[in-house]
Image (tube, rainbow, N blue to C red; front, side, top):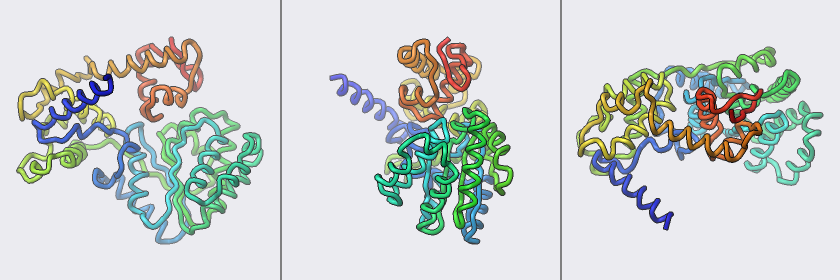
Length: 372
């Protein structure tokens, strides 16, 4: 009965979007991981031109390279990695989400991906990683082994996403091990690209341990108002009802252009936050905005004032806090543990935890968190 009621409510909510000729809320999936395809929603920026130039020239030369994609949380780093995978169709790309806190965990993730792609049997992978101690004692040998396996099919791209989860929680000794691992991996690669995505702080730390490796760096910057318009209009267009696509509508409808600009200002030019505001504003407007009317900036300021804050956001934070408090009580916990409990990607979990720290509901305990 509960499931039927939930489904009924979801159906009613989706019907509400029809007054704007939308099949559903176009912004329901914020993270890149939740999207089946990136290319139809992508908006080119100067960053993408630099990224394309570096990747294309390295591949055309048939050489190896190390590329850093650096940007704040929610700036579009994972989006760029997925875009690379879609655009270089004939080159195998191995994407690793670094949701671990040790070098051993990273090595395991890489071997798991290798096995998943059929480059290594399950038995071979188990034998290579039968003990955590073996990883710590032989990480340079394992780096060489990984390079050899990945090179079996010629040119390849290895992507290490959100490496800050490891870097910002590692001791100096562990960072030295990670630096040595990356050095050996890069040295043994003949034809391929290692792409590492991380926040600026993690790049600055890791850079101290890999100075001998030549690399390129692309910094993902804040989006302009024009780019914000394109990002939202592409999602809106994909969710238009079939007949609506043939009607002459403003591409941003039901948002007014100044509404989008104000959202982008409040979001600080951060794409993830922009999409989150768009999702919440559209959802909250279903019942309160009259049939077919556009959503103006005055409604945005009323509902999501930077000083007042959004009730929707507050409810999210309160719900997460209650779940965490009930699960962990007084003991400390990691971001990874929290992400499993609240069933969110690590990147989104981190944002929520940091907000709860700002509200003095959580406190940092080294690289972990505790309920205040």
